[in-house]
Image (cartoon, rainbow, N blue to C red; front, side, top):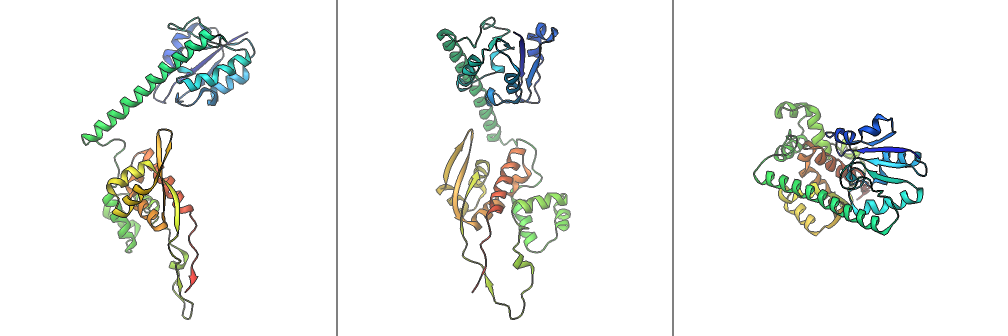
Length: 307
């Protein structure tokens, strides 16, 4: 029977110094250490790489040692999934500090099960309160006009202007000089707006005697618009885009959401253009815009047919 130390911290700005201090004696004795650095507590313990490795290498009768319960679980769902696994494998779970020190949290008796469930509920409540306070702080900052995240190189109005000027024939380098940004910034704005994705038929001049080709009717496409883009377009989008958002279906995904919109492909392209400024915003906004751009691009163009 051996001891196994488990460490976890939530972000890359945090450290495990406090945990190591609580586990000093075990670490000094050379106890094996398994870690999940920069890993959110919202990821179930059984899905974490470090803890999964610990389970694979643990033998019956081994004891998992943690500095505090929140390092391993912080929700009722997590501990309810974890305890049966520990019990089946004959493993013990002990917290090294605080009121729970000395208690085997993997003990298969009604009293321990109740105590662990209550503890998990308290930890989950604490985590949710932290998240709620963070959201309120962000909302308060936005309400006072503060800009959060990395400043955007191009604001929404300028992004729309760039797209329009490009379509009127202005070269990318000329746009970069005019707006005092790098050419790659201009390309990113144009690409995320789909402005450079022209059909092959438009690149070649018409041939004399060739049949006139006309595009088929604008097809409907059902695409999920990320919530960050939806929030932006509700205030900056044109009337058509806002109406499409109002009639769309809200799809909840964890703490985020998307809006499922069935509309002509041109409307999706318009929504992409009108949210082009997010391509220059923070990492989350840039990712959301890339995801939607990929969805729009993935929709096959309607074949052209003779008139």
